[in-house]
Image 1 (cartoon, helix red, strand yellow):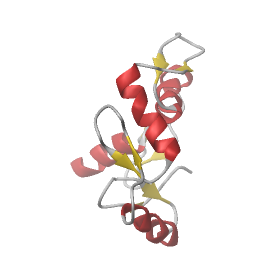
Image 2: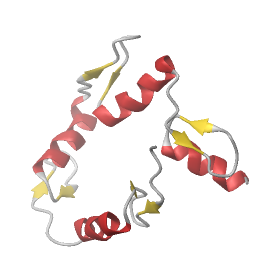
Image 3: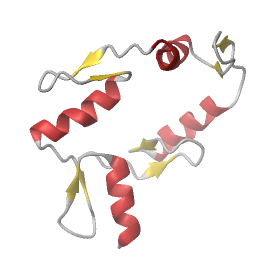
Image 4: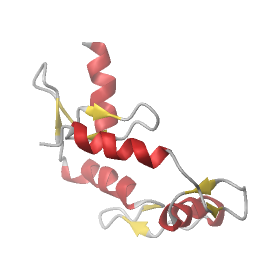
Length: 112
């Protein structure tokens, strides 16, 4: 569970299915109509722009119920929460170790 072997070479996002990766590749092309008023960086979706704008505003709406630490993105909170729960959903296919994030697993796999 949690393995996403198909990686986007542009952004590093992982997918379970190769077909999902192919669909995702299309997201890197096309117009970017939503521009940040602070830095000019442009995005394809308004929701992505709103998340980006938190960098400028300092807003961190996602709070950990264990330690009260706050985060800009819900995905970061999900990974952080695993520190408290001990959840390690990313197993190494070459040994018995498990990891809290896909990036930790990728780093480990380079050591094999």
